[in-house]
Image 1 (cartoon, rainbow, N blue to C red):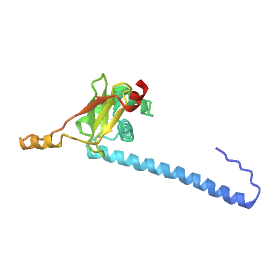
Image 2 (cartoon, one colour; image 1 turned 180 degrees about the vertical axis):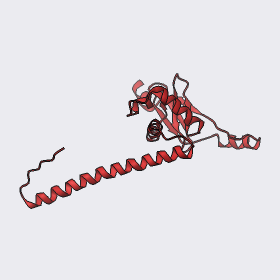
Image 3 (cartoon, one colour; image 1 turned 120 degrees about the horizontal axis):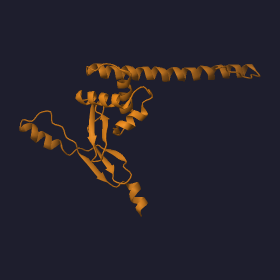
Image 4 (cartoon, one colour; image 1 turned 180 degrees about the horizontal axis):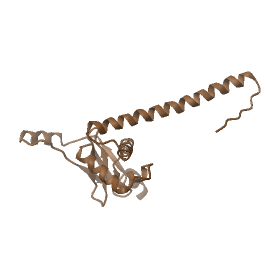
Amino acid sequence: MMLILTIRNTDQILFRKKWWMRECSEEKQEKDFMIMKSDEYKKILNENSLRITTPRLDIIKILRENHKPLTISEIHKKIKNRKTDLATVYRTLNSFIKAKLVNEINFNDEYKRYELKIDRHHHHHIVCNVCKKIENIDTCITNEIEKDLKKKGYADISHSLEFFGTCSDCVEEDK
């Protein structure tokens, strides 16, 4: 790419030089940030004894940048590398589930959804029955139950609690 500028005086030269340097600097910062994130994703895979592959890095990135559970087809659509087929996404997610990196969530429909466990606090979801919007619920009422189960000798306790209702937007549309 060639940049041609028409400059009428030395003030414009100085301004254009600063502008060009700022633009280059922002591009470099963005590139450095992406490298840093990539290193972070590689570290996650290493810590969980998983081989570093492009599809695994892509899927971790997608799950980490989305704040709601995604279906396999949603994940596949977001992958930039078109060489990654649907079977690879399935296999990768299964390996992430075994390594306890990902939660598999069932909202009583035909699709399983997946959400990254790491770096996230424990939460539940509410799903709108009309528009299917998914929102996180940060309050967990099951902590006391888990304490009781631990007293009874249970270990590695987990639970899944999902709510269903009609969101305020859909309620307004019905009126």
